[in-house]
Length: 264
Length: 269
Image 1 (cartoon, rainbow over the protein chains, first blue to last red):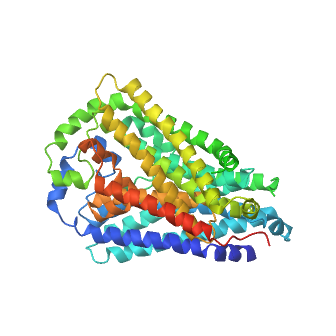
Image 2 (tube, rainbow over the protein chains, first blue to last red):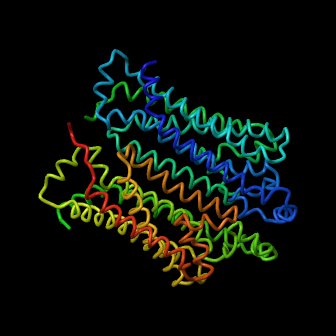
Image 3 (cartoon, each protein chain N blue to C red):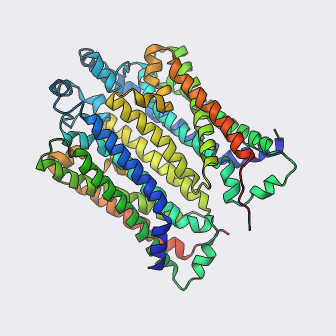
């Protein structure tokens, strides 16, 4: 519990910065949305657009003239931001003890390594969850001045669940890297590559039908906002994959950290 | 400039330069390999796009992208190269001086009989050399993959050169701006986090601004200053925007020297 609270406190600043970025992003986005709302000309254009290029930009499946459609479009940006935050928090929370040379102190406490990781992982999860709530709240505030439907709120819940799972995926990857990498600098640079790769592959996968299979290697494609909106259900394969990644990463994290040779 | 600091820095970045170069080559290769199958489909797409009002195409950044041409398709890959190079440049920039402080080697370095200005110059040049090496790999890689996959479709060599030259400015922008930011901070906790946030933040501004068709975002983000679509359609840079980047680079470099010369350095005990 002490470790948990300490970690929460240590991360307040970072959480505030990320929250600020998210709030700013949502507010700017929604204020710009006024240009789209109820613009029938725009709708006609989207209807006549052919799939290939537009699907890469995720424009196709949404009616951009409604708040619901606009939210679907923003999903990509939300997932990118929250994933970067979660991934770096996950790696950082483990790695920072070695970076700041406090790891010897932390490990001499009468706490097992496993409990240390548990406390840290929970703290990082709490942080991610708070950031998610901030996102949620700012979307609610941002959408207030527009006409919303019950469908919108339901979609919002689905999106938030999807975002939370995404956060957990990247968080566990981060924690695993933090625990498993020999040198602390490795963990965060590999995390960076994982994030970049996931993003680029997700753009690739949207480009062409034949590249559909790519969506399995990038968590950003596990949740398709268009399907969440129209079918109101999650893709079971993706959920299974997400669960597998989280479980494997966390198990790996505990396993490797138990026998970790510290970098001093 | 001190040669031994320079060489030490280059050695420090060696592995990272290698990894970035290989990933970028892979990226270029994988993307351009799909060009052929994509190009025929894109020709149909173009006919439909041609019937749409111009303002809307501009708003969605579809203006001037002809995915059936070599460069039109290349511009898509190029954007990802830009993002990668920006992350790399920003991470070198954020780490340049701050790494000495986190590794507690700053007092050792500063006790050497070298001025702080010289230290910064050597480190800056070393980081820039590293970035230029990666850039050179991207240049060669671009020409090679285009030749491999263009399937005798024509392309403008000059425009391609313009695109590739813009990478140089983009790298300088992120390198120098990140150094300035790192010196404004008391302590850089995680170099990579900061670098990702800066590069992706700028990218999101550009993508989001493009989607909303808002011109004010164009001023803020270097991704818009060197927007590949604009460069391809106009076959020239948008000079006023490029000037903004250049001015920011100059100001950041000047500011960095000023801040570093009088920086209070936290040492062991």
